[in-house]
Length: 387
Ligand code: TGC
Ligand code: FAD
Image (cartoon, rainbow, N blue to C red):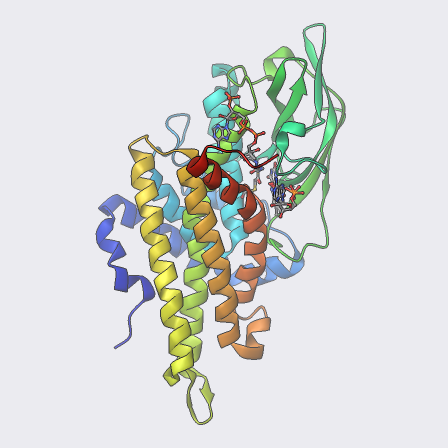
């Protein structure tokens, strides 16, 4: 008899019925409707916009938010949905993270009632798409240095600047754009058909290929006063949105790891080397056992953080612990699984190298590993070593 890696940790018993239902539903969607097309989307370097309707139809966009057509699930359910999406491809999870945790969350937390009514129901349904522009070409880890400026012209705002590496930028109907004003960082909702706004798709990516990544150019973009997010008063506002997306990654990255490990176990069971199955060799079993330990420990950490988040008590430093550990372990697992697949492992027929390549982006975005190490270091010592 063989076991699934996570069975050894009894993880299922830690979940409630609703959480298990959400997980099973998303897993079915990914396996039946999306997985068959993922290698092709990865190869052609795109994620079709139509996928949004499918994801929106299941209530996955902004699913952890309340009201305005959002499902209002708990954090653990949201995490499990991210895990199942990323078991398909990190691009799918990114699609949902950016829409729900960055675009919708920024409106839900900091928007006016009018902005919420205008955008949230359509974003939740997948009828409209959002993106989140914080990073700039010269300011990624250090968004405090951003050069995008918003200045007043009468009651209007004029925005000038460039945002870079923006997920869904070329697909979005509305962009949450963060800009310096004379009075600190503020957020703006920019309909993407506003004159002066352009989105240019980034090509030639070796990672996160089943995802659209863009440069946003704002050239004298004129917005009415009502486009400003009234609740956002400093850099703390965009950084608080990152907590939401980072939390999803704590679970999501483990999906890529689990899928890699299940693929490697299945492959090792049928691949014969030196006249017997690869799975029967001690070196292979050592790899599989070690990876199972890290996957299971990461899962226990994710659920623990989810329970803390559902109590409303989670801190950004705790999310840093989860993001750092689970992405670091997930990419190590995906790479190790690739070794078990030998040359077959370098093709799109098997998922581990696709996952490993995607996880290079996940290691970098939403705070690089170095940023999360430094956040943990600051929490432990009281000394900020970023600067
Ligand atoms: P610092 O002085 O530490 O903080 C400035 C203000 O912000 C507050 N703050 C936070 N609030 C909520 N949540 C957090 N995680 C927060 N981190 C900081 C802080 O309390 C302070 O508030 P106040 O009231 O005192 O002003 O700021 P710093 O400039 O020293 O920077 C700290 C650092 C390096 C941790 C921060 O800049 C950082 O997190 N850098 C990484 C940037 C990053 O992660 N960018 C991600 C862009 S979005 C993206 O990648 C999407 S990928 C697509 C997908 O998700 O799928
Ligand atoms: P840099 O900040 O230039 O860092 C380069 C290296 O220097 C890293 O290893 C970093 O850890 C290290 N480093 C930096 N500062 C220090 C320090 N103080 N001490 C030690 N080492 C340091 N951004 C958005 O706003 N919205 C999005 O939707 C979005 N989507 C993305 C999608 C993809 C596929 C990718 C790859 C990125 C996306 N990003 C997005 C951008 C992402 O958040 C940034 O790439 C990330 O924050 C790192 O910034 P950077 O690339 O400028 O690297």
